[in-house]
Image (cartoon, rainbow, N blue to C red):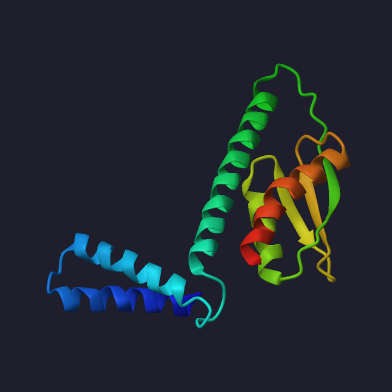
Length: 158
C-alpha cells in the first residue's frame, strides 16, 4: 500500500513538472490521473489497490462513530434515571481476529465506547476480558461487538 501511495504522489508531482503549472488544482488533477495509472498497474505493484483500504478505514471510522453515539445515549439513559437499575458485569469475548494489531485496535475501540472497558487479553489472544456498565445478556453483548466493530476491523486487515 505504501508503495502505491508513493508512486501516486510521485506521478502527481511529475504531472506538475510536465504541465509547468504548480497550482493546487493542477496537483489534484495530476493526482487523479496518477490514481488511474496506479489502478491500471495494480497487478505489478504489491498489495491490493490502496483506495480499497482507504475506503475500509473510512467505513471503520463511520461504524465507530455510530457505535460511540449509541453508547453515549445508553450511558445518558442510565445517568438520568432517578433510580439505578443497571446491571454491571464482567464477560469474556471470544475473538476470531489473528493479528495483534487487529486485536489491539478492537480492544481500543471497545474501551473508547462509553460503558465498556477492556480489562485484558488472554495469552493465546482469543479472549478479551470486558467490563460493561449495563449488561443484558452475553449473547447480545458479543453479537453487538462481532457484527459491528470486529467485522470492520477484520475488513481493514484483509
